[in-house]
Image (tube, rainbow, N blue to C red):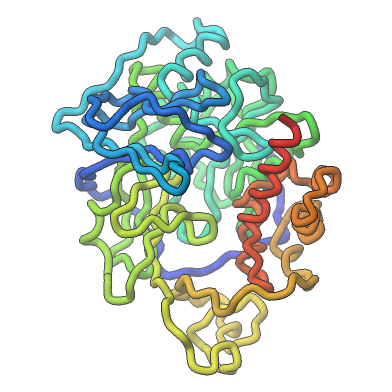
Length: 451
């Protein structure tokens, strides 16, 4: 029987637009993009130019700091655009797919016969190494490190998050192969965190070679960082790797079939979606292919990811590499008469129960991206501590980052957190502090200091 950990702090945000468990045939995207901005602390070096023909698995760019890590094309076709931003920062490498999809073929052998170095070599050659992220810092794992453990969160507790067990339907063989490959990379344990309400028939309950821990509680119980904190906290000098369950499946396909296949099941959710459903999509796909599913009267915002941590990509943007959900909500570009001073506000959500809507805790809300105010002085309210189930002091950590005090950041737990772990702190913040951006600034300072 698995161990049960109860998460007593957190916040579940009830939004309209949960995806019905119906898998729809997804239209083919007109373009696919690999975005260096999806990978933190990456300095990309291009390996292709506009007009080049590529196959699925062809390297598009590498990491200048670790050239053996390559970032591969998700489809075969032609490189149609290399998009740059300010100071020629590389934003996207866009590929227009060919009618007939072709993949680079990699030599595979039975996993049990492979050494750790052989597993690592195949993952690096194919681009599959980018599935692995490391703690601390939330960056692509360093292949020269050996992690003390690998963590996989088998559920997502974020608002409108997809049902992970549903997205893995029919993928038991590939998932088990991915786990078998990962076991070669660490002398420690592979941990899988499950929701306490997960079905006994879940494929994750049947996977061999892992240690399962069950979590009960509100969001962020599904965050892998919260699970690490309660099982094996990251201390200075520790390295832990994490990987998304659908990337475990893609890894399994690599070792079973010898191809780089990053097709996944994603949820199209949100109050502006006509019929929220699941779609099969290749990572990096253009979401314009799903435009007929969206209500446009409220000027929708298209988010790759969830409403707390996702990225605004616009109606013609591309799905993020690590994202399993597209959320569409109203933009919120309006002014409200009386604003917060209106005592009724039955349609407005509040964590402080300052509105009458607080009398209806099970009500689902249509929320928009309106901030309802601007940044204010950073005050101590105790709000952060109510929603963060970790033994750290988030306000003091953020103030240490503002002061650029490296030693204090270490003492206050910066090795344990990345943006998603403090996303709820930003949501409840009365001062409108951009907590996630501030935390990333501190992490970047730590990486630079420790280099």
